[in-house]
Each structure stands twice: as structure tokens, then as C-alpha cells.
Image 1 (cartoon, rainbow, N blue to C red):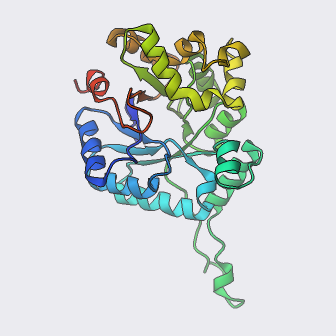
Image 2 (tube, one colour; image 1 turned 60 degrees about the vertical axis):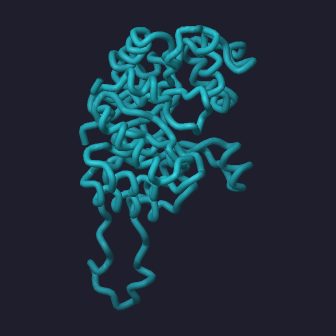
Image 3 (cartoon, rainbow, N blue to C red; image 1 turned 90 degrees about the horizontal axis):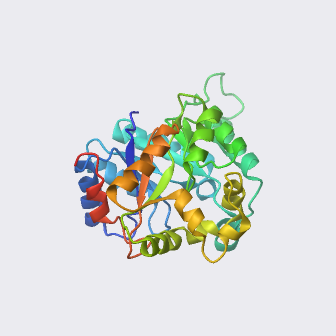
Length: 304
């Protein structure tokens, strides 16, 4: 799988099917090699991916991310293989453990230790379903279906241990809302060959107040979460930076905003730090699920 250096991170879930297809085809024409789709819980991401893959030619579809509690491991593995086969290798599964408020308050499930939960889930995915209960006591050796090696996958990872697991049990990592220094450290942990695909928010706005306010609105949910704060502290940020929606220092460290030239420089800093692909999250002034900011999408397109 050749990811290319520039993908786009955007939810198309709120669109009707024709608009989703049209948007994906437009991104493909503009030269973006990958569409990373977050879970917005409006549509089934795996079904949505199948729809878009059927109507595009070269665009890679990636999930950024699907939480592991959404599907039983064997079911996730089966869907992963199906989309890989359908697309001729254009589907990249991004998995994550999500966050306690989503898992426990929204879905009423138990949020376990993230690293252990992910390890156990990957073990079960790779092991495949236990079909012995259907084979009966007289089954001959070899009647069980062979466990298949799955297509490419990446893990949502911020801390060193999850990053290491991403290199050992997946093809790489998909960090979110992190500064270039995190990309540099992640590359060192992952080694030279693994995928490293950080999400980077982009605001094409030169007015500092407008740009930072838009970035704060887009990142508000994450800024409130302790696992993000814990990681940001490793890069010199302090508790005061997380108050009142996030300090200017936090936004400037993690978000590319300003002119096209300023944004290009910020994106390049992630590539220089070792990113395989930048997953550009174009912040739309109309809201989180309003789709991409097409003006910015076109201005920074690889094929422009």
C-alpha cells in the first residue's frame, strides 16, 4: 500500500449517499491519496467505506478510527478482509480504544486498561473465530479454517507503549492532535518502515483570533480528555494550557493555521519529523460534521 504524503481526514457521514460519493471523487481528482474517516455515529463506517470504494479508482479509504468496542474481533477481521478484497488493497483499518466518556456514558460499556484491551482485541482478531463447536467430535485434524494474516491496519496511539504495540502488532500508528515533536518521537519508537500518519488540523485563516477560535472549537472534546493532556505535558505544555478551551500556545503547537505558506511549513515539519503521511483535517467554520472546508482543500491539494 502506497499511502502518499498527503491524505485528508474528514467525516462524510452527515451527507446523503450521492453527496458522499461526489465528495470522495472530488478529493481523488484533487490528488489526495487517502480519505481518513472518523466515527461520527451517523452511518456505519465499514458500509460507508464499501460504498465509496465502489465509486472510486485509486483513493485509499482509512478509518481514523473505529473503536474496538463497536464489533466483535472476528467480525471486525471479516469486514476488514472483505473491504480489502473488494478494493484490491485500498482499505486501511484504523483501530482505537476510544475514551471512557464515549465507552461508558454513551454506550454503557466498561472501559478497560487501554493497552491490555487492544492487545486482547488484536489477539482475537488474529486468532479468528473458534469453529470447533460446529465441527463435532469426529472432525479430522485440519478441518478447522486456517487463521489468515489480515490486511494492513494501524492503531490510534499517543503514548510510548501503544506506539510500540502499533509497530509490533500493526503496520503503524495514527496519532491525533499532536505536535511535530511527538511525530519525531513516534518515528523513533516505530522504526523506519512503519506507517506513521498523524492527523493535523488546518485552518486557512490569517487572522490569529479567528484561526485559533476555530481550532479550539474543533479540538474542544480532545482538549478536555486527560490522555491528550498527559501526552501534551511531555512536550512542555502545562495544565494552564488546557483551561478556557486551550491556550494560544497549545493551539500554535498542534494546529497549522495562517497563510498557505505558513500551513505548508507546519505540515512539512511533521514530514521532516518522520511522518509517512499527513492526515489533513481541514477545519470547517460551519462545524465539525459539515464536511471539508473546500476552499482550503483545493488550495492545498497535492494535484493543484
